Length: 230
Image (cartoon, rainbow, N blue to C red; front, side, top):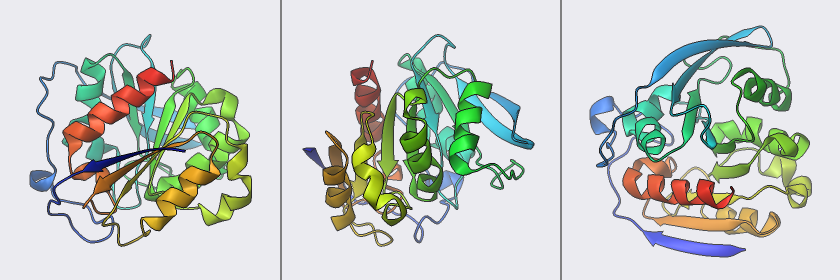
């Protein structure tokens, strides 16, 4: 396990994974130029909302979300435009039953596998905060050939897949806030140790949705990680 501890100043945030109002979601300082396209794709009988930015030929990044967030969180944070401007194909979706997406009866891993195909994403790096770990872990484990990298951000479902974590064979960056009151930071080191060759980035003073604390630094590290997988 390779560890990187980054010190951040704690900024205001709501309760555990509480949705911060748009005015409180920090924006990136980078110049933005990419247009964000809002679209819908049919997956397993569900109509899935997707926000898309960047060239279709660029390395792909798939952004999932926590239970009280949505694809709009990544728009508000500037993630889509910032990383598309840096040369990535960035897709943020509303998971089934969340945001503007309807529900599906597909298993989580099958849903993500079909979503990746429907969006024509070639081995995307998958960013999975909190609740979306319930989708990402089975996808990475059962469809690893379709995944270029994995960024679990204080994810749910770690215990559910604990015995299989050693089977993960995609590049992994575990990201966690040290002030996480939902999943204590001790879980970060355990998760990173259980996944072969995983990197660990601790955000000092950051809460459960750690990416909200210092978005510019989060974007920089995420971009660096995606480039390292190519």
